[in-house]
Length: 292
Image 1 (cartoon, rainbow, N blue to C red):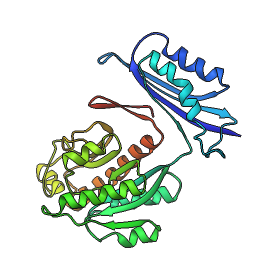
Image 2 (image 1 turned 90 degrees about the horizontal axis):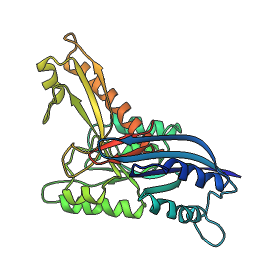
Image 3 (image 1 turned 120 degrees about the vertical axis):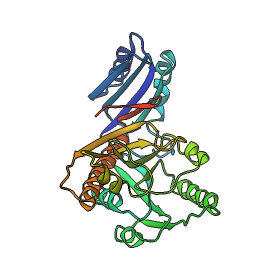
Image 4 (image 1 turned 135 degrees about the horizontal axis):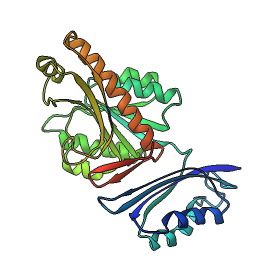
């Protein structure tokens, strides 16, 4: 039996890293099927993603209850320490337990659920959380648990505590803000660091606040777009994973701009989640390295 794994790492750049990693895998009979690397001159850091196959590696816990790749991780630890690496080895077939959060705009949610059901997103969607009831029937149609957590200034802390209860109960590793229109508290952002992804519209120029597409129409923008990024305590300022834009012109009304913008948002978020789930995104300070 052959299983596929991904090794990702970041460390100070120096000679011998690639040789050490490839040698480690060769000694264990692994076959490298995909490899990518990047040295950031500005930060002096080196990033690498290696996808490899290993014969005889089980994909489930053995009869003694041990993690079958725990030994591989332990064996790699001396290499990681030698180069001061932050390294992970994961099984590629394992789908990330995920919660999707949404408010009253369902285009991203609908798109993600369709892609997931079609086998296009390597996620394990455990629940949908919303501060409104609008999409409980959509959740039911996909046989996904729906949690209605209303949010007011007085109940915000309680709602976030209940969200964390869901995250813990479902052993969630990824939280998706699919047009969830509540600002997360700094405490919650810190607890979800590196495992929460948001999507928002991004215009040139950028329009914040209410009715952004109306503002864009009033200013006669020529490009509208979207940005998917990791959630941080700085609102909409987290490390960017993916962006895209669509060209528009003066003939288009607000409804047309809105429809185009929502299409872009859906596609950008889906790409970001796929790359994250395939362990192709490594955080590099305030930005990311994406091995597409």
